[in-house]
Length: 334
Image 1 (cartoon, rainbow, N blue to C red):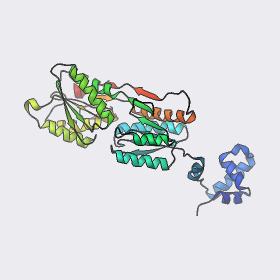
Image 2 (image 1 turned 135 degrees about the vertical axis):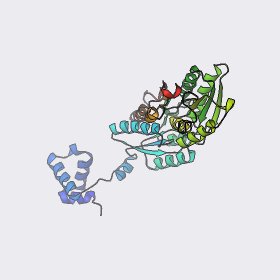
Image 3 (image 1 turned 180 degrees about the horizontal axis):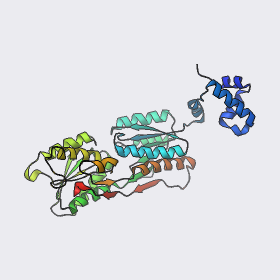
Image 4 (image 1 turned 90 degrees about the vertical axis):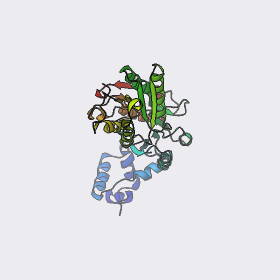
């Protein structure tokens, strides 16, 4: 049976109010009384019920975080950054993954609202942000992660993915490649759509260059390998000479299809570049060129924006942070 505050009060021969003050406002109690109550707590093995206290206060000490895919090391590093900043303020991050499914994202948003989190960080799985608008209207602050919207409804931390797509394909073009495939996930994911827009801009600047889109259901190694097998099996003029993958997981899958059986040499026959610059991009059998995003800093700054808004809702503090992507060149593009 759980030990209650009343049990501690009886054991320490004090009132319930005194125990409450020791737990929540110890400066109001004499050092001798604090020591007596703490001894009773230790003897009885009392654990305070933070959930009940938080419900009375109206908010928990937690922040909800919904990412597209926690199996992607990029989002794992975003979560680490978020946890670091939250811990500095005595808060915890409740991490969930939508698996790129809007309906699953909605279910987690409902759960976080029920848990009375202090706010929500989310990488939206689609362009439909009505559920997020409703959440914010209900008094739950929302910060978009790795995403930005034109209006000022949401605070956001993002990267210029149009520029990132432009950098990736411009690099391939500068290497003399002209038949480029963009292996992408669903364009309902805004980051994918923006990277495609940047890729198209780069191709439009070079005469004779061509960009082909190869869509896959999800941004995973498995689907990248399937796309790579399709490209590998082409012959003659149908074969591309470069691949831009919408993230590094797709790029790793493409590389497996090309290089493991030795049927296509990277970069001699096909140059390959990914996106995110996850840790093991540099450790693949042919080290991957990639577009780097500051994943840890994205998570850290997102929590920071949220906490600033909680501390001073009407203040003139920063609401948008936008990073610039960086081209990282390795062996896969020569």
